[in-house]
Amino acid sequence: MSADISNARNTDIWIAGAFAAFTVDLLVYPLDTIKTRLQSPDYKRLYTNGVDSKVSRSMFRGVYQGVGSVILATLPSSGAFFTTYEGVKSVLSDHNPAWGNGHLLPQPLVHSAASATAELVSCAILTPAEVIKQNAQMVDNSSADRPRVNATVQTMKRFQSNPLALWRGYTALAGRNLPMTAIQFPMFERIRTAIHRYREERGLRTNSIYESSLVTAASAGSAGSIASVITTPVDVVKTRIMLAAAESAAADQKPSGQNGQQALVDATGKTVQSAKETVKETVKNVTKPVSSKGSIQIAKEIMAESGVKGLFRGGALRGVWTLMGSGLYLGVYEGGRVYLASRRGEKLNEEDLM
Figure 1 (cartoon, rainbow, N blue to C red):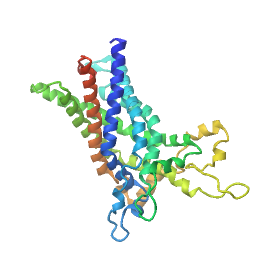
Figure 2 (figure 1 turned 90 degrees about the horizontal axis):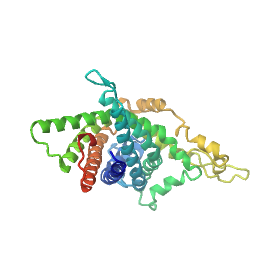
Figure 3 (figure 1 turned 120 degrees about the vertical axis):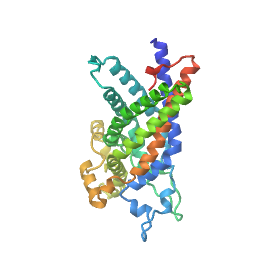
Figure 4 (figure 1 turned 120 degrees about the horizontal axis):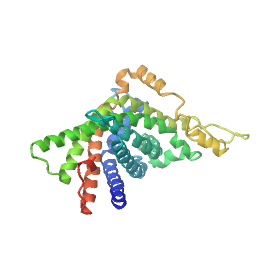
């Protein structure tokens, strides 16, 4: 493959991935907001009626809070994910030695390794937006007796003394996404291949953009919904950890200094002055957990509060959201990639497709 074609295809991946991410963010973001609120430790206090414990109207207000930060971050993160995924999958496939009637590394393992590597790269870009998004989704704008606030701006102010602390949710996000992609992508590739083979055997294969997009969407949606339900407990813990970052800010606002003046404390509990002591200390803080509690401890607390069902809170909604989101995301991505290639007069073969 020539360098020009390779560069053109990389550009296609970035454009298609960005467009897919933008489309999904706008369409399914409200479901993500509701899921975050369901998994919040303040769910009963903020989003249910005290008398009958029914869901209150506040659950469905401001469902697009924080969407701006996510759109800005998912455009580059989605491009980075697909570029890394396609690249690693290609390298592993090309250097996978023959073994018996197949290859040394089974194809599902190649897909898992490629998706896991891509997820680690993507999470590094997406983590700050994810922390801002989930905390912005929890800002209460439902009260009529006080003015509405910009949820994203209010959340960002809590990290203004130490912006690098926004990356301290990286391990929580990667810990949620890695097992999900490791389950989803091999399943997605297997379902997609099976559907194409079925249509090929019955003479139904058209190799059109519409067919490629639809098969990819159906395969990704099915695989994603199954993987999301299985990994819901990890998602619940991850939501609690990320919400803890901003929640601790309010509790840590207290007098500090010689004259009892109020010192600005960010979401990590550090004052502006202490956060700026040394660059080395600030960078070191990124590796610290965003919550003082470990994942296991948080999971045990959820179990004590609500039992096993507490770990699966929002699982059904997450399954529906991922069914729609993954289907749209990968379907639009694949259709966009095929369309951009066809505009150049280039025909993608089976190996070039996802």
